[in-house]
Length: 456
Image 1 (cartoon, one colour):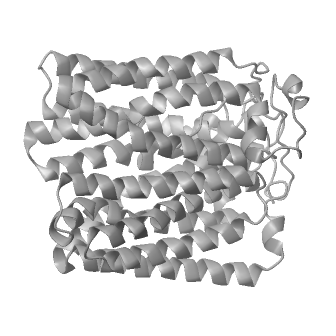
Image 2: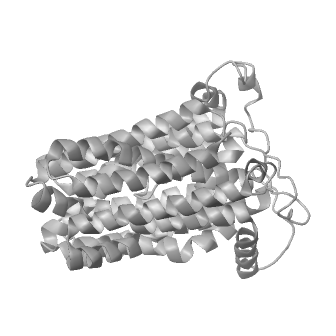
């Protein structure tokens, strides 16, 4: 799947007829199509959410396809970066590659969200998976025939970013259609677990494959892996899509979505926290190679250990969320995770040897995943069905789209004050974000939990 996979895939049963519900109207999640027989296999309260979510046949198909494809995603991500560095020898080229792949998500996600709220989400996803597969196969052919140049990789990365701008909002919004509101937190947690598990394994496999036969085979295997996802989408049992009645233009739908998010206090606050966190916290990831080399006195293997520690914490956090099952108390979980992230970043900036750094990076990865997955769940449960795709598009803009700007900011600050101080500054700002969010929670009191009931 594409490198920015926010672990989910989705389809929409028929969209609601008539006028879109307002912020105060209840939004009822449709039952998971084709899963009636699964409901009898296990009681809703008799199993943990981690297992209960697999009673949904459509989710089982999705999970199986993603498990295969995400390995290909991370293999391609690592091989693509290595290929650019091998061809150019430039760290600036690596930064430009990341910017080229992520900036389309920031610029175009609102269009993807508007499309997801008015079209068949499964059809959108099949289209994006086919497009992503073709881009991977083109990269494989160019690389394996020794025709590839740096600008080719930039063009392909930009193309994949454009595809992701339409894929990510549809995939996020599709989760509710597969599992319903009750099992949504567990499904998002499982998706995050799968994503971070692949992040731990995929780059390692890619490193071995690149050393043995070259980058082209990673691109080829990623292209082939999309077959699993496409097959799963085609096998899902879903009601026929009912197009909504003729309504406003795409630009008007975008304005409506932006207006809804701005008026809804809970959605607005979560989106601001996600955007600020993504912008600032990416500092540690951007500067990790410099920290491994200049601060910790290590090499490429040290960098691998550091990234593995982040992935281990992320996987643990995702599994923990999935096992909770219930979405109750997620506002508090967001606060705890935001605080833990700021504290972990600050502690990491003080590390001068490898083992303390590894110990700190595990809770850092855990906090990041718990924060973002909990925010994702809250946004979906606060959004009426008619607005969910557009709200998820704004989440994609804040989570993924802010990353290229954060990368530029991190580089500038580190150049001025050094990597450790730049990371410490990021930690302090994240703690400030957590304090602001905590004060908001305290001020809103008992009204907080009511925001997740029926899209209020």
